[in-house]
Image (cartoon, rainbow, N blue to C red):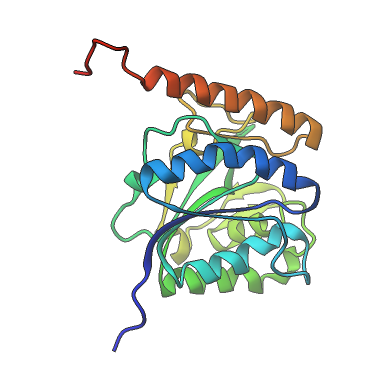
Length: 229
């Protein structure tokens, strides 16, 4: 007999300590997006594993969720959804369990775990276990992102792409608009992400992104007496 049936889809984020304020801002965009596209929404303000620095908590959290949901979407607490029209699940492809953006910063390829989509099931569990097992990155400046890079066949010091791994062969790279960052800007951002800035600067940038998102949503409304074609 198979295991219990998985629930459908969830969007998850975590912002602890001083990042709680960032998560509160981000939630203003996460909530409407989740309702529009039929996702559960899970927002945590406490780390789930105190044995490692806070950014690592996303790994055990995701490990739990991929055993309970068919699709899990992680978005960092310092990110804002500015275009809510398109469901990120439209990017799903056969034979791929992991989805994230590969940025090119000063010519260096860098997978970014700030926005990730994982299919539920044992393959995602095994991958997340492999990430957690790379304890050498416990204090690395990129935290768990560095471990993910190694598993996908990247060097992080310096950043460069190495030989493909079996994990990378089952990974799909999302268009950059799903994880827009200032070091690798692209047109048509759907999620704006602000890593690397001080917390006060991130708050200002996120407020501007929320205003952008509101303006875009107003553009979706059809004036009275007119219809969409």
